[in-house]
Image (cartoon, rainbow, N blue to C red; front, side, top):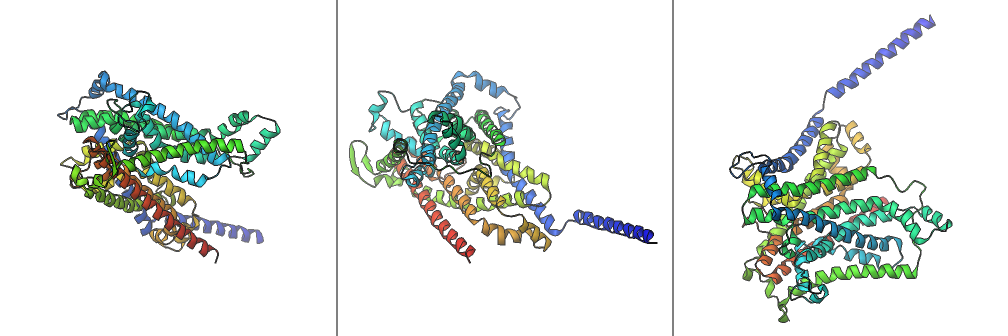
Length: 580
């Protein structure tokens, strides 16, 4: 009897397990209202990037395969471009400038980062902060400053020994100034993560400093070097501001697009050049992603952080290098600021505010305030869209294939140059049958363009911040039937506030300084400060152009300073809350 009873009991338990399993499956099949809302939000996020990124790029690709009448001609436009020696030379010129600039800036950034991370030189924080100055200025500003320093009436024109700054020399110098802080950030990160035990082992084995450098230091930083190289190459080959101002007759791809579209109204050939310019950027981005996937952790759980030891000779050497780099940055920025106050360079060096009377040179203070308005909208709208979309990707439940698609689409803008995206917007939004045609030539299209153009960095920053928040918050909220958007608003957003502020400042600064992303899509009513710098320089009003560039720089520095103070206050409140 006991055996039969136990069999019946076993069968009863099995039936109960089957019923519970069926109930679980039924719950999975029966989606709640919150699940539907979350899925709708993910679909809207995908739709946003589809309309704001994928469709414009597809339209531009189609245009490159058509003639002026809109007939399909296949690769005839590409063949025409390549067969034209004058046009194709710009491809070789762009590659040449990109390779030289990348090599120079990688060397300087590595030496500077080595000094910051591997020596005991004084003033590290101050030197590091000063290297960030180029991030807050449009790329036009260093080119304008180089005209005053090395141009025909330049202070140090004899340094070039008769060579002209208008051409590859000026472009390389200007690019190195503009790209340097981007590369330095990667190099500092790469050299900061090192295991002191490896250096102790090298010392025990009596390895020379040179051998230690090539067998320990370089291998540990190789992935950072490669990644920094791809970033520098992409930034240089896609930049428009520096070659436009100081390139002279030296043609590159970015200025070719501008000449084809603005100068000759040849939109088909502009689309061709855009596709060609897109290729090296996509290649660099794909190669960088591949390298990062192969990267392995350099620090194990037992690793000992490397602490540099004082070495007077070594510290003095790298301090000298860092000081030279920082002085060069200050010289470029200071020269532009000084020149904007000089009455008539170099004949009347009296200081005056006449160059800030932008009305007298066909510009306006309204353009400066237009830029501030656009940057504020980009910061507010862009931060909200990017962070919430990243939340859906990282913390969303189910609907995984679509969330993965959203993440993939969010990575694409990194590989799309600003000029390419701007031209794609012309082709897509300027079509009469496009229901979104009404935003063309308005502030809205400028804001949309900037949000999409700078989307990827903000998305990755958001994902990194969200990964640091325990997933239990979402699980507990779901078990308590709390809507996901309530969890997002009450928990995720406050905890991630430092990252959110960082994203908003990043978007504001880049919207203020960008030229290439908006050079094709502004109108007379939405003229921006960065574009007015370009126009004033073209008209020969270089001092006024420098003045507007300095205003942009000061505005970005002010916003960054306010962000730093606010972040410190939030950090203080957070620490106070934790200590309770």
